[in-house]
Length: 487
Image 1: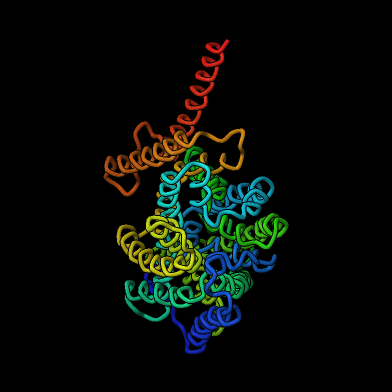
Image 2: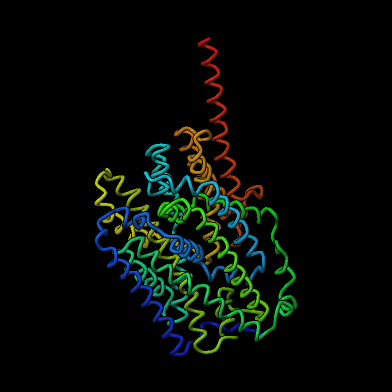
């Protein structure tokens, strides 16, 4: 087992840098070319936000799969630190949630041609206040902050710039073609990024096998806990991630792509096919993380897991391909999350607040939303240095606010009253936020110390569901009383 405690940055030859730069240029060119092809539709708000609801199956799968993985450095961190539990918490629960979405919700969402966003849906079913509450929750759920942080780190590694300069380049390069081309520009770029993200990890694994050997090498060089399904974590910790995975049911990026699918068949089977691709990509990234842990006893930080492995096993040229794959994985998520968040700020908040009505102004507000999203992302980045900590915190706090009211909105017989839905959203979100903040302040370490050991996600979900159950019970009591009076 090697020691890479002094590893800091990748060592790239000119050919490696040329491959990376060529990809960055090609990605922008593809985004702008898509704009020219659809120039006659650019004034249409639906075209700008949902690509005219015309996504074909290949485009749908490419954009959904590539959007799913943005924190590739965080994935490497987790695999290096904890082992195969990465697949147990970041893979399996999301496959089941996505399949449930495909067979239960995809048709309902795609058939809903009256709405363009989750906030639209909540506003129509539960009223304006619920729409605004939902917009705020969804905005933070789709924050591109952890992925911009990842992209900035990659730029720092490759080009030797400071982290904040890397973050700035990441924001500017992502905004450029989104500002003009909207959602379609994001989808077209995602199709290239889909290919490259798989190519990158398909390159490094054979070289790792050739250098070190197969599964036997890994099992003999990693801690025992790395090969246990739950690692060293408690069952309660694992269950939190499984419930967080239910956020797939209310994920704005998933919903946007299902809204934009050409028809129900594309939406349904596109999600199913995406699960297959997610499975293969998770296996590749987890295996690469295990190879890094087996090969290096120590690293200055676990975020260097993939670069350290690449430096050890890849020749000149192949390193450029691998790092381009990492970049593509991140950039596809940055532009998707950035645009979705901008749509929420621009259309669901500012445009609605200004009275709505004239949809010709939606594009202008959405463009303004790009800059607001970027500014708030910088604040979030400044408050955390761990990517998966942001995932965990946002998932734990925001999922309880939205999960039950939004999911039940598609089932008329189970749908709560507008008042109950609004209270459920507020109670779920605020209670989980309170539990999280209290846990952070009660702990002298980086790990929160929650009251009674209760994870914030459980607190929020229990209270959110409790509001809905009590509301349903009281409604039946009142209805029964009214019937008795009338008799």
